[in-house]
Every structure is written in structure tokens, then in C-alpha cells.
Image 1 (cartoon, helix red, strand yellow):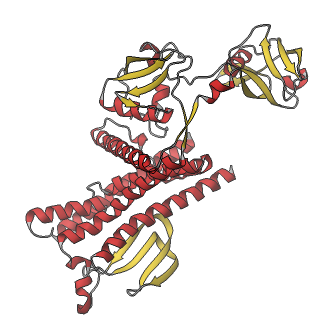
Image 2 (tube, rainbow, N blue to C red; image 1 turned 90 degrees about the horizontal axis):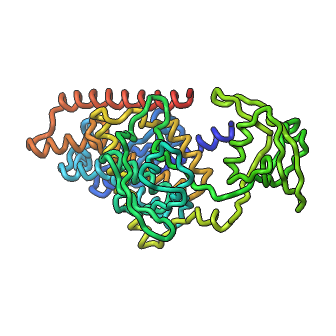
Image 3 (cartoon, rainbow, N blue to C red; image 1 turned 135 degrees about the horizontal axis):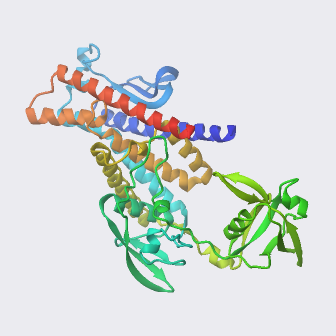
Length: 462
């Protein structure tokens, strides 16, 4: 537990440090480019933990206590009197175009960083699972669409999908805007087409405090499991398995003289026999033996199930079939750029669709996540490997850019909105109007922070 929390904290701090530093560097670089003097470059807010001055302008580079953002403070007559000899280097003295350039440079830096991370991710290679259907439940939308076990889904509305992640993203995009999607699939070497109906599904619905629903689970997607036998990897002391003499390395061939398809079926059949003696046919060191065992009763989700106290792994009947379920999505430098741009565009349009539906009430605020969730995802992605963490960094960097470009006072987008008004009316927005807008923006951001923290904490409580 402690190690998991530690990894999440490390992942969060590393993520924030990288993304905030690059965002603020965008402002810093643009300001220096047009000749504005930068007084402070800060990562974090609040009390200073570390500070040094660099360069001819003696810019203070600061690391502060609260790592939830950062800022670049420029020479500005609105904040303090400026020496007449340096007034030409004050931010407020610059032309409208130059000020807009400095403000926009932060989000643009995050967009560039997201493209870089996705480009690196696709070149490193992403381990992925092929979207191959398993045994579909009767209520599955995939089954209703005429799809069967063994079908490999290859495209959604003409867009190719190679992995479960591709499929999930394509279905979310389709379900937000349409009632059905055209699914291309491969069966026995032949290509087929069918329509998948969403039946009023809103992938952005949900209750506060709960994680957003997985659209694949909601639609009844079942992962493909190759035929396999259960191999015992460990035995719990004093459990029914231990008392029956089962050992690590034993392979279960039959239950009560009957074959079973895979490990899931084995677990389900054991679970349905609480208190009833069973005879297992096992293979041990090349010999076949028969062992009688009585699963003990246990309560799970309000139901009585049978447990025998073993740790299992799947021993596939056809190892090649199992290997074929996994692919590595890896591209060269040129192809990787195209993939990075495509992924960035997909996530940008999807994010703005979510925002628009939040404003119209068509999406639940349960879809919003805050620093606690980000820390959790950061820790998980670190554990899953470099390519996963690169993808996570790219997504958060793009999200940071999109959030900052929203036309909300106090954010970069709010400043750009003020500059647009200035360009239209031919004079700056009055200080009174700017102050009122800043108060509104602060109230909106405060409300947003309360919501995302509440979501995060409620999820932890659940």
C-alpha cells in the first residue's frame, strides 16, 4: 500500500514538473523573443523552496511549495513602477499581437510537447491487445449486431482499429454523436460489416464519486480467451486444496470426469459447488491422479460461492493462439509523426465534445478528475512501462493546453479573449471590467477545483 502511494506521488510530481515547466517555458521563451524582461520563472506556488538568479536580466528561477502550477512574472507597469530606461521592455507596453503571442505560447508549448511524447511512444512501441471477441452474453449489443466468438473487429465507421484501446476510443467518439456505428470485422478470413446500436447509451453519464463507465463493458464486450487448462501456481495453507494434497505445478484436466474450456469456466464451476465434494483429474509430473476436494463456502457480492484456496495460471492448449492476441504498435520516425498528429486531433475533438456536453448537461461531472486521480494514473502508467507513461504525459499535456485555452478569465484563454475584445473595440478593456472578469474567473476555477477534488475523494471512499 505504502509503495503504491509512493509511486503515485513520484509519478504525479514528475508529471507536473515536466508539464508545468514546459508550459511556463513557452511563456518565458516568447517573452524573451520579443524583448520583454522576465523577472520570475516559478514552478509551483507559495513558499519558495529553492531559488537562483540567472542571465543578464537576473531572472529568478524558483521552486515553490505547492506543485499545482507555475507562473512567469514579467516586467509590467501595472504591477510596480518601472525604470524609464526599461519601459520599452515592459509587457504592458508591447503591441496587441506581441502580448497575444506571449500568452498563447504556453498552451502551444504543451501541444508541441504532447505531439513529441506521442511520437516517442509510437516509436518505442505500444503493447496492445487485439479486439477479438470472446463468449458474448445474451444481452450484449455486439451479439445483437450478429457478431460471434472469434470475430476480430477491424474498423469503426471506416476508421481502422488495431487494439482494444483503439476500439474503446472509436466507440466513445461514435456513441457521443450517433445512435449506431458501422463495425467492420474479420471472420474466418472474410471481411463483414454490421451495425452496432448504442440504444441510447450516453458514455459520459455517471454518478458523482464513481469512475466513468467503460463503454466496452456497457456494450457487453467479452475478451477472447483461448482454450486453456488451469495450472496451480500456489496453494493456501489449511485450505481445501491443501487438505486434498494439491501442489504447485499440478494441471487440472477434468472436473468430475468432464472437460472444461478455460480457467474462467474452471473457476465458475468450482464456485457453483460450495460444500459439495468434487473429483479433479490432475496431471502431476506426467502422471494422471484423481483428487477429491470439497470447496468451502465463501460470500462474494452477497452470494455464496465455492473456494478451494489456490492461485491459478492459464496453460493454453495452443500457445500460438495466445501470442496472436497481443501486438506491438510500433512505427518509424515519419509514420510516428502522422500517428502522433492523428492521436492529438482525436483527443482534442473528444475533449471539446466532453466540455460542450458538460455545459449542456448531457455529460456528468463524474467525468472530471483532479490531482488525486492524476497521481493514481501517473503511478499506474509508470509501473506499466515507458511507452504507457509517455502516452499518459502526452494526454495530460494536451489536456493542460485545452484547459488553458478555455475563454475563462485567469486562464490564458481568458487573456486571449480580452485581447480579442481589445482588437474589436480598438482600445484595452477597462480595468474595472478586467477586475470583475478576474473575480468571475477565480470563482469558476474555485468551483471547478472543489468539484474535481470531491470526485477524487468520493472515488477513494467508494
